[in-house]
Length: 338
Ligand code: PLP
Ligand code: COI
Image 1 (cartoon, protein in one colour):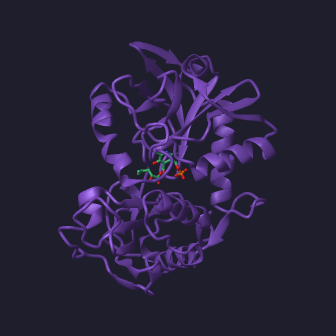
Image 2 (image 1 turned 90 degrees about the vertical axis):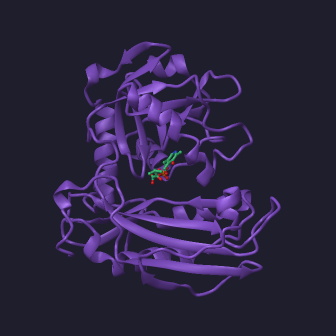
């Protein structure tokens, strides 16, 4: 492992691993074989579609080191599929899913020294798809780049696995019905920076977005999906303008098939969420993060006395144990990277 990395004090910030991947598509969806290169700046046209019109998507995934030292990835083909589906929405050529998985695994192998020791964090992998050809009119770029870089990371929420405080924003929407909220479109993220800054200044970890049509239903957190537990039922907002999270999908499957909970995806009214027994959010970066309170219109609702709820804990434990090969991988989710 590179000695310069302080694996004991990782945060969710960029500390680039040595090797990156860069592939290009010049015409008709045909990708070159790409190359693994030393991490560094790339040259790009000032008229690139991604710079001028935001024609770009990204993914986020983690490589983990198990107790026995194996390097593993969690459902990497799902990220590849989501990227390919998102590409359609923003008029980009898909990057083939099998090649996506191959590149991501090879990135882990080549950057193995950057995967933190067991229990200390993960190697966060960031695949990107960008329109890099020059355009002037608002139209798809003539050339595309698929890029993958990686960075060792620690926890996403600084509090660790301690319940966080969130606020429902009525000042901002994240996504419009029929917009781009359902894809991992780079523009979605520029738009949530100001709301996040404002809410953090008020002492919250992040904000929760409501649906843009009626402002009645919970959508999601800035970069994580929303769940609540009422009795033996797990509820989560239905797909549409939210990101179809891979952690979300996995949590639902564990809840249903391992824990025997009833799982309901629906338009989730704020009042119903506030009346829940437990609330949490999920994501690659966030994993399963318990929510201790939600503030809505100035009133704070506290869940489970700010303690991690039983269902949240069980889902976190089961998911992370599968991810670390400490639980039988009955769904075939874990892929050895090296
Ligand atoms: N919602 C948004 C807006 C996100 O950016 C993410 C992170 O990727 C998620 C949800 C969770 O998705 P996943 O579990 O696939 O990481
Ligand atoms: C992820 O969970 O992987 C994300 O992409 C969240 C974020 C850092 C944008």
